[in-house]
Amino acid sequence: MSDLALAIDLGGTQIRVGLVDALGQIVAQRATATRAMAGPAVVVDQIADLCAQVVDGTQVKGAAICAPGPLDTITGRVFGVQTLKGFEDFPLRDALSQSLSLSVQVENDGIAGAVAELCYGAGRSYRDFVYITISTGIGGGIIADGRPLRGRRGMAGHLGHMFFHRDWPRYAGAHMPCFEDWGAGPALAHRAMAKAQLNPTSTLHGRPIDARAVYDAAAQGDTLAQTLVHDEATLLGIGCATLTHILSPQAIIFGGGMSQAFDQLAPVMHATLTTHLKPGFDGVALHRAQLGTTSSLIGAAALVFHPHLAAGG
Image (tube, rainbow, N blue to C red; front, side, top):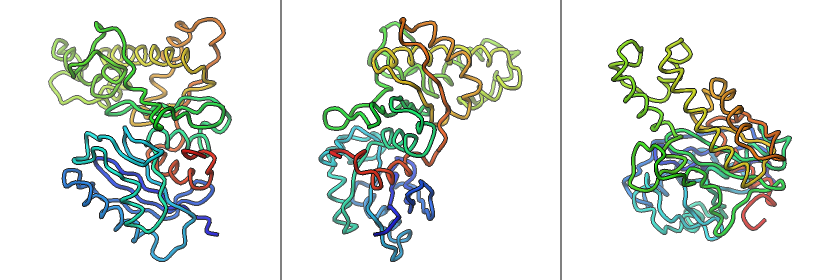
């Protein structure tokens, strides 16, 4: 039996395919820009082409794909991905299985990231943790009693869509503000642009701003940027307190682009989290994810090697 899994990470910007061994090491990998507006058939053909390049005659133990949600991990159907045109109620598992002539598991990319950290990363010491990925949006996965928490249709873990008070700030969207609206990277950039316009002494004044620029400016001593980072850490800490009261995790693990600024955010996040926790919920550890941008790909492979962690396992 092969000790390699075929793992696929489907995103709106990029498709990555890799051969991953049982230790979570990527031994071969290919990537291409997703033809996101061309429709599912074209994207499935892209995936199949990359898989053929990577496999190249190698025997694999199994295959799994992770993709943005919402998707049903039991039936393998995708319900609607904003960044992929035509992926509305699309049978991704069946289409890919037919194209590859392989049985394929389908998983939400946030849950796949959580599984990767559980098996090979910062979650190895825990049976209960929340994995949060923060970049353009907020997603994640929940590990409860050593297994992924999936819920109905396998769709648990859409952490960014927790709703909060309607008067809390948001940067876009007509719905009531949610965690993603005020905690993700674009929200931080939006707040920074508004404040920088009124603060000509800041290095952020009069220049293009994204979240990375705010963190960099704060690290270089910009007072406005440091205040923005403090406020961002406070908002994230409040979100973590909400998740802690619902899920009672041992740890919260942060992935995505925000993890690069973890050291800047962690002290205030932890202080805010501790302040807002009820008695008995204290002692939650905060960690940076260890697997970075490869987490979802490695997590997909982990489902092949650890079938008890897969949907229905």
